[in-house]
Length: 252
Ligand code: FPP
Image 1 (tube, helix red, strand yellow):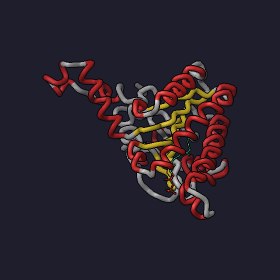
Image 2 (cartoon, rainbow, N blue to C red):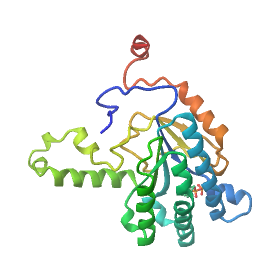
Image 3 (cartoon, rainbow, N blue to C red):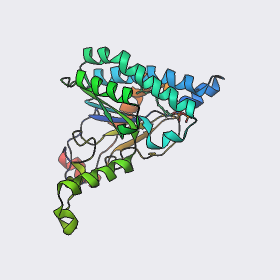
């Protein structure tokens, strides 16, 4: 497991190492143009492509995108179907581009709910990019932060039956080692487009000390200049991790 922000003070730099994004506002972008909501999602795929390219160029090592939450099944059936189709298309069409760009793809979430063909494509796309290391692109699909903490707890107890008899043996890393992104550092910068200011059950454990950036820009309009704006905002933040400002400056 990478460094925990509550156990130690992680090294930081002006460019975030890990960026996590909630891509919101696709539906409203489309409605404003009298188009079906699904047209907004289709346009949103272009912003995903742009974000991957820009992050790669700017030296970001981990980009994590919330594509479909555990709660998104509550949407109208045709919208869910379209989102699944977009996901399949993106996996089929984009893998070569990802390979060329040195991007390693990961898909996290409860994938057992997806149809077998989609599960197969996910496995294949992950395998095809597994030797890449420039940028780790993680797509969270049928993902929920609470689901992640629960599945981690179950795995931890299964691996360590003694914990059930003596819970004082449990420490933070015993649990965080089982989270589905245990191989990645905690996000430095969280971005939510679309104007809402909430976390919506995304990476709830890992966002403990993440800088939170909210923008009214709808996801389909989120281009390179918007991402650079978020990075500039991030570069101005003083990351104290519980310390005082004076302590942070004394360290410099
Ligand atoms: C939120 O907008 C967006 C989603 C639930 C889906 C995001 C999916 C994509 C950008 C396309 C597929 C992704 C990949 C990785 C291929 P919303 O529908 O909640 O917008 P609204 O708040 O305006 O209604």
